[in-house]
Length: 247
Image (cartoon, rainbow, N blue to C red; front, top):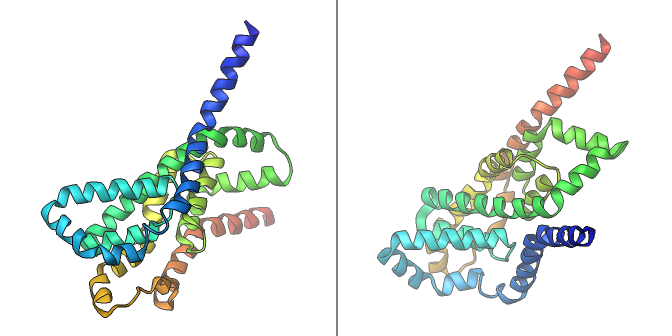
């Protein structure tokens, strides 16, 4: 009886890690096999065919685009930036941003759930049971989840897949993760989608889009302002806490 229980437990453990294993394998294979296909050059060389297909099959184009973007994010495949540019190129800044944010959020949710299933609950249990510095860090994050979630989405230097995994490992509720992801990625999505919307003129000049535009002062400073705004609740808590201690 105990042998059967242990076998069942082992299978359950393997099943828990299976989604993460699949994602890791697909990401590794995709990094070598798809990087030459999911690229700016591919978009440039196939732009006329894409526009013709969109004009003849608009709803199908939207569906295929969104599903492809979801898979790129969920499996951490190369080409997320190109996909964002493509959204702007095919659908314009407004609809392109909507489709990009929707697809990126859904893909992020998939990898978030896979990470939580594989490692999140066990890591959370260990952090809850720990003492000292680890316990204090966990408590600080728990008390300021919204601020931290928005911050890691808004800071351009934080890789997207990292911002998907950290909340899963810290047992952030799914609804908080989904809302903060959808809202937090909007500024960057608008910037890159608008660049994609202007690719027609870039292609006509035979140039390459400037993807470093997000670090231009007139764009970066407002995003940093949003980062500071997301930190405001934490600052208020710290200041209020110190005042209470003084009293």
